[in-house]
Image (tube, rainbow, N blue to C red; front, side, top):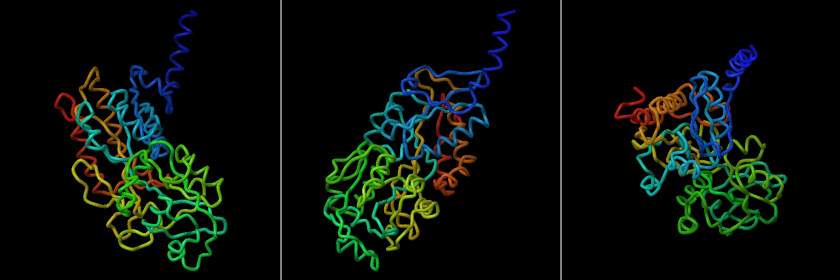
Length: 361
């Protein structure tokens, strides 16, 4: 009788164990995938930029299907490495994988865009709310060439704004990140000096400034340092009520970072593999430091001891993100995919196979 009561208690508690997202420690990602009461657990890791969006997505998916999605926000580079090591069902990256990263992977990897976001220039300048910047000026600030807020080039861009005779304190990321890749990709396009050195990458040899870890670290340091300037993702600036500069785009328009201007930047023809940079956009009303963010999966899913059920569950999740999940983007200040990007993402998702059979029909 005692054993029966124990079994009944277990049966009642079991459903509670699968409700909600479970954020395990990173070491748990190396353990075997589990199935609880027939509900698959899907493991992912990577980009920090879409983490608030993905948290909401995966929580809603769990409520809808009972499937747990454990996502570790460890940075784009870490997500790519874990996918290459085959310890996760999907990786996530703000930057498309490079040709070298693709070649170093044990099999072809498919890029599936999920939403768009933006890097913004934010600052702590007492008494000054809105500032205008051009790409070359931003580059020279971060190169350490423009060192005072009342520099003539800044004053010319901001006629009528009283800029103080104050030193500029540059704050940048100290850790490797997709955020840095997007920011440096943009600066490499608008500044020859930046393109020569330090160039673009997830980690850089910074010529000026102080480093802080993560968007939260950069945001915190800027808020504590009068006269400082840095770059963070749009959502962090909004959440922390930080000023965001208007940025001059290729068409000569000063653009506010918004869901509309970021979506506009992504409304371009995509290559079939969707690996594309949309910084310094040609779109006249597009925000110039915009980017897609991606989920990454192997094109051929029948590797190692992977089951068809696990592969199908992963692709069902991704298909839901591309459709029902899009409506969750805007409320969290992420830009939903334009129609053309959804179609390209659908085509890539449909190309994923298990034993030469498409997992999405």
